Image (cartoon, rainbow, N blue to C red; front, side, top):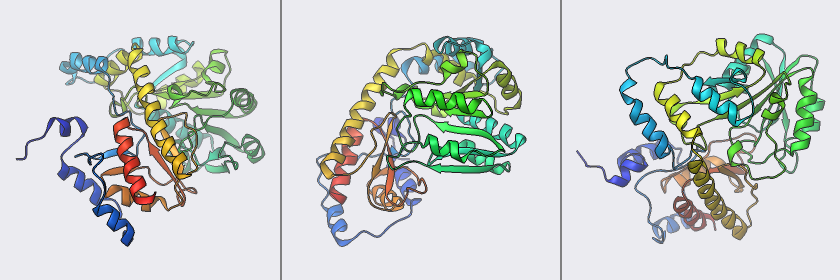
Length: 381
């Protein structure tokens, strides 16, 4: 058996595993020029012996040391079902957001919160109004439940078209869905406009705001909608997650914030159950100030590296308020996926209708983003 290096252990598998992953990516023939570049790719930054994951908006540094310590201390309970009290975690996240635990539901990732609300929307019937493109989890679930999805294209500046969403409302619209910051377009809606829109929509509709990337935002105009819930407004649901800034994607812990009446309905309709280890890791993480600051700092370094490349090559991109960017590569996204895969780099999936020219690139460690830039410039610069 081939022994693993420490680096391979840390970054996820052997070269054989990497080759297996690459084989699953559709191959696009390289032009003669690209083939020459492939053969002569400078070794300024050597190719890593693991797959560089720029595809899933993960935190490459997580879980934090305090989260790993909490997992270790609770590992002896992993043979037990999760009947552990999640009250301390709920109290912590409630305190951080100015609400009470009665305003909080804990899910197996924010994905379960999205799915639960998608199910509730299906039970109510009618239609859902959303920006397009945006994150699809809730929309897929509602669509499978028989709800019509009304997609309002982003404007020329790639911003959510709030006026267009107003105009798209129908008498049967039961839910208005917004992702802020958006995904795959990493911009935010200006705070005052967002607040006015949400309050207006919540008079007659349920409003869901996905804030999965809240902690990464540095735009001073941004405003979280949890403040409206703290003020007592009904018909508003906000989701957050421990998957991104805290690096707990594999442990599946997310949160929904809403009026207690909505929270009670969501609690008994959700079907997942958090694990002992996930709850312990999340609670430790939300008590830690240092790891989020570190993650944000490194994320900013990585974004600056990619932004510099885009500026040098004249590529249009969206100023990011998340841990990913959106680049107008000018090529079909599957072509970029395939050719980057040849160099051990996984890039983002398709996001119709933008996948014919745009690609979402997740941020990883700065040194890995330098490698991505080197490959991109060699292939397309």
